[in-house]
Each structure stands twice: as structure tokens, then as C-alpha cells.
Length: 138
Image (cartoon, rainbow, N blue to C red; front, side, top):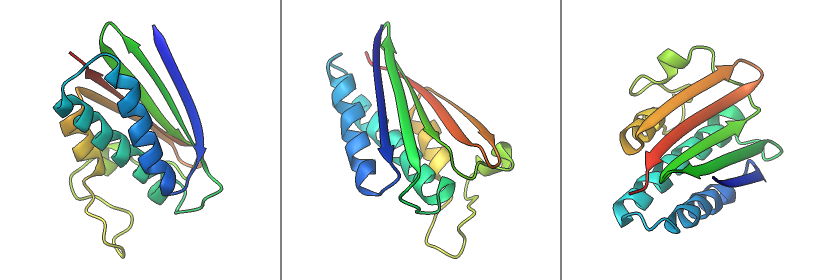
């Protein structure tokens, strides 16, 4: 088993850093370009959700990524300790957003689900959110 743990502040610049880091981490298993692109897109959405919704763009928040590769499958968990989600089932519906006054599409979880093999969201209001995803690399 191969493990990667990263902890960063919740700033927009770290979205691209984490996206690239997870892409490079997976590249050692020689997945297709499409697979790497799918993973990077899902990571981008999860991190952006943490920054925008979990922390309301407060740069003092912390985002953690725990990733591991087991038998050519990536398991990645994007964790924030922000606001949390009142109703995960509702939040995962297409076009749902808590930021209706901004230009948000409400498709973050939909995008993550479409690019990864599995996604599970666990959240407690006031405690934060954990987005666990997996993707076969070969």
C-alpha cells in the first residue's frame, strides 16, 4: 500500500497544487491521460467545495487529503473542518447550491460522481465534510 497525506490552507492557489499533486501521485501507476484528467477534475471540485462552501473563502481553514493506492485503485479523501452540510442527500442533487447569489452551478458533487468510480460524502454541521472517492487506475 502506498500512502500520501497533504495538509494545506484553504486558499484558491492550493486547489491547483492539490490537483497536480494527486495527478502526479497516480501517474506512477501509468494510468491513461483520461483517467488522470478525471481524477484531477474530481479533486479540483472537492477542494473548491471545501474552500467556497466549507470555509466561505476563509484562508485560515485547513484542507487535508489522504490518498492511497491499493491494487491499482486510488482511494482519496478530501477533508475540511468547516461549516459542514446540513443535508448531504439534498446537497448532492444537481444544481443545488448554497451560494445562489454567486455564479455557482451546483454541479460539484455531480461532476465528482461522473469522473470517479465511487464517491461518499460524510458531513456534520459545524464539524466539516469528508469526500471519499475512488478510481481504478488501470
